[in-house]
Length: 480
Image (cartoon, rainbow, N blue to C red; front, side, top):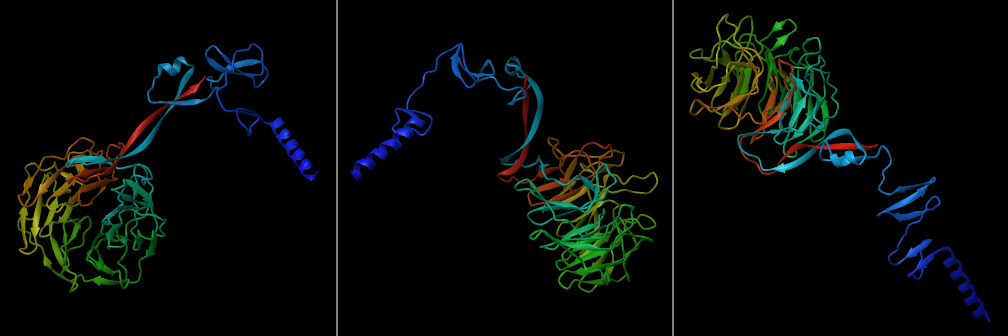
């Protein structure tokens, strides 16, 4: 008897479930209507809200007394198109709404002697008189004056040319400034000096560690006097600051900062060159060479500083030295200092497309060939590839900004043809350039004609799978 009751109860449960869900070809329906097979829906003239019919080759739904095709989109619905105009969409009741420009990353095999763009996503605001260094894998941009604005900043970003991506640096406790110097210690970027918004020089600095994205203020005890338009070089253990413009004028003083002991040591003025700013300074591996600049008048002299003994070895030769100038570039080849371009101040006398090679081992100058050289230029950049000097941008002596460049080989004393114009960065001066080992990266600057700036990478040696950024255009149309 107990068995029969239990069975009847089970049958009652099944009956109730089956009454709730209807199955066609389904033993246990899981929905109100659960069909295993095809369903044919026919046409009808009458309906209630929620009724579905198949009419004139399309499915329609009944709502609020009206049959509407399922293909009919609500007004305001947006659809995307690769083209504009799009006749098919227009004929279907759509109106053009807007266009979207989407950055798209692509990996390509780069071509030697060609330009590539630099991604704009997360890039820092375009600026001039900023600090820039190469870490061995990334370029760091910091500080400067915003392009087209009178604002100076204390922000920066890190650029990876392999992935073509930017990462924002953590906020710095240093005040905003332009014209600061920057050197790379191997693990940290050292920022020092510069000028504030009204042009007053500064005498503080900080070290930035990209591995931890952190800043540490540089010890201010015995630091050099506040200055801008000075130079800074890295010896391997110390940052050497020299010259520049102080609140009372140009100076020939300097100091060196030991990153390990976090202490400053003054550089003597005995046998030092005359005070100046706008000069160049390079590190030979054992000594610093200072040349050119502007004290009370333009100079074409220089001097050699011995970091080991903390003394000046003496002046550089004046025989065959380049003409008086400032705002020139100076780089070290491994055996010689190359000077090129700049601004001359002798009335009515152009320095032309001149430069010089200085050999410290023989204390002698050799003029660089002018044939094939860029036009007279200042505020340009120069990098050393290991075999050639590459010049880019600057302000022409005749006026206007440049977006051209050239390569100089000191071994043959010859200039090669100008850099390619296809995809070249826009014209500029007071920008920065770094050398990665196979490409020169141009960033920032100022166009005298206030034109828009785009940054770029000049590929010298081929490298597989360099990332570039292209823009994909999507046109949106709105349903009427």
